[in-house]
Length: 325
Ligand SMILES: [Zn+2]
Image (cartoon, rainbow, N blue to C red; front, side, top):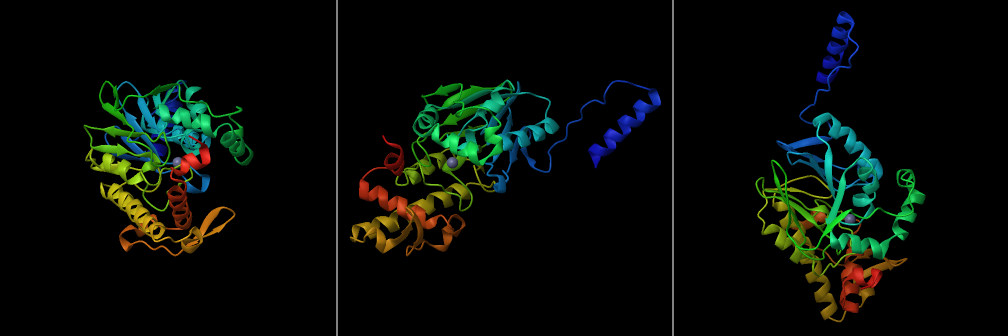
C-alpha cells in the first residue's frame, strides 16, 4: 500500500509538473517474502511447491552476498525481492552445496555480473553427479531448460582452506566446511559480528533431510562443529529460521537415528527386519525416535533408516555407495 501511494504520488507530481523523468526507486525495509533478520540481512523461505531452497541476502557494504543460487525460478523471485530492498548489486553468490535447488541458477547470477563461490567440495560433487542431474532436471523443469546449458555452471571461485573469509566494507563473512554431512561439499556462512549462521542443508528445520549423497554416520559431528560457533540465529536451507535449538534438534535427530540403526545392526537384524524397501527406497520402518525430534521425522524417515543401514553394511558413507569415492 505504501509503495502504491508513493507511486501514485510520484505520477501525480509528474502530471502536475509535466515531468518526463521516472519516479525515483524507493526501497522498502522488507517484502512479503524477503524478511529482514537485522539491518542488512534478509531471509527468504523458498516456495516448497516449486522446489526452491531458502535464501539469505547479506549487505556487506560494497554490495550484496546471496547464500545459495537456488533453482532459476527461485533466483528470479529473489532478484525481484532484492530490487525492492536494496539498490546495491549482488556481488557474490555462495553455493552451500551442489544440489539443483541450491546451485542450478549459478549461470543466472553470473550473467547478471555476480561471482559464484563455493567450497572446493561443491565443484567436486558436481563432477560426480553432473551432467546427469542437470539433464534430468531440465526435462522436468522449464526454468532449468530455459538456462540453455548442457550442465550446471560450476562456481567461478572455490576455496579449500577453511574458514575462508570475505572482508566486506561493512561486514565480515566466514565460509566454513565442517566435513561431510548432507554432501561432501557442505558449506556454511557465519557472520561473526551478528551471530548468524546460514547452514544450507546440513541443518534444516523440519522433515527435509535428504540423505541421497550423505554421510549419515558423520552428520552429527558436522552439526556439533557448527554449534561450537555459538550462533544465536540459524537460517537453514529448508524450513523456518530460529535459534540454536534448530542445530541441537537436527544433531539429536541424527544421533538418535544412527544409534537406533547401529543397535539393530549390532543385534544382527537384517535390513528387512528394520525397513521395508520398495524400488530401492525405504518406505516403512519399525524404528521409532523420541518425541524430541518429531520435527525432523516424516515421510523420508524410512529411507533415512535404509541409508544408515546401508552405510553400516557397506562400511562407507552413502554418498560413496552411490557416487563413488
Ligand atoms: Zn540439498
